[in-house]
Length: 116
Image 1 (cartoon, rainbow, N blue to C red):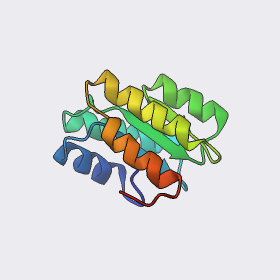
Image 2 (image 1 turned 120 degrees about the vertical axis):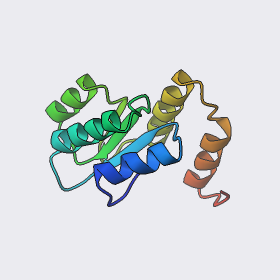
Image 3 (image 1 turned 60 degrees about the vertical axis):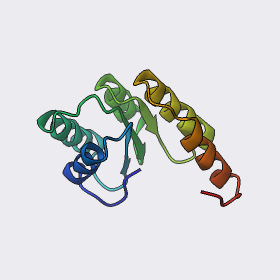
């Protein structure tokens, strides 16, 4: 997930890296506004095919709106890491991107293994 970057920066990085997925953390601004900006940036950079997940402080009604906008995963505080990984894997699989190695590394890290 991106940290404290603006939607335009997140999309630029995802496009440059030919990312399989763009995950954006929302902590201190309106989730709908930020996501609309992010999706508009994707359209402008011709990379709307990169699926988007968001996480952070997001209300239930806002989460429903985000899903209706095409966001593949909306996660709030307390979300289980396994659910986030499963969503990311499903989104990548839908794009035909292999995810086994990357998600296996993430799974080891979440269990405290520390291997990258």
